[in-house]
Amino acid sequence: MSEYNSSFSIREWNENDRPREKLLVKGKNSLSDSELIAILIGSGNRDESAVALSKRILASVDHQINSLGKLSIKQLMSFKGIGEAKAISIIAGLELGRRRKEEGVPSIPKITRSKDVFDVLSPHIGDLEHEEFWVLYLNNSNKILQKKQISIGGKTGTLVDPRIVFRYALEFNATAIILTHNHPSGSLTPSSSDKLLTQKLKQAGLSLEIKLLDHLIITEKEYFSFADEAIL
Image (cartoon, rainbow, N blue to C red; front, side, top):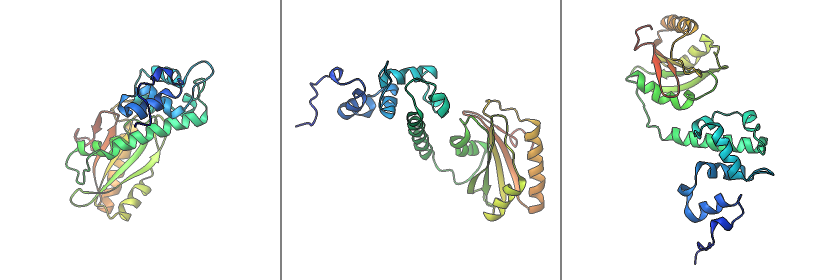
């Protein structure tokens, strides 16, 4: 005999318990986005249930889970009923989902085109609200030896130390590198500082016999390749 009696209507359950019980009885696929978030936060506030609060939070980002994942702890705490612990629970839950998606990305052991670089690093930096600079380190066959975060910045830029870039290249015994960074603004146009940095690293690599193959600017769904545009 089932532990739960399906004839016992969900409508009769406490409103904060409904998503949990619904998951047990009907399975995870039966839950809406707001019900899943309600499970993460556990309870609402004096004026609304966890589900109602979750609906309000989702409405603020046009019901886009991707956009919700970009909210900071401070932004989530602006909603009545969301304290620091609940905000952290939401962020942690969405980060797990992002990492699960990342694990599903096919392994690309060898770089043959700029799209391969985008596929490898977009899950890491494509939807960030701040800039990060990463480097792919490759061997003679353009197989990936390592991918490495070099620096983290703000919304408009990040500082890159060439010594760090090439220190890792020597450590990994790389013969080629590919530079990448994201633009939180969504713009794919390289800035003058992007171009200067590219040339600076290209020249530094020549003296070490480490070739700079490309520099990609990455946004959530698109990218710009210096090599493809013949400005490397």
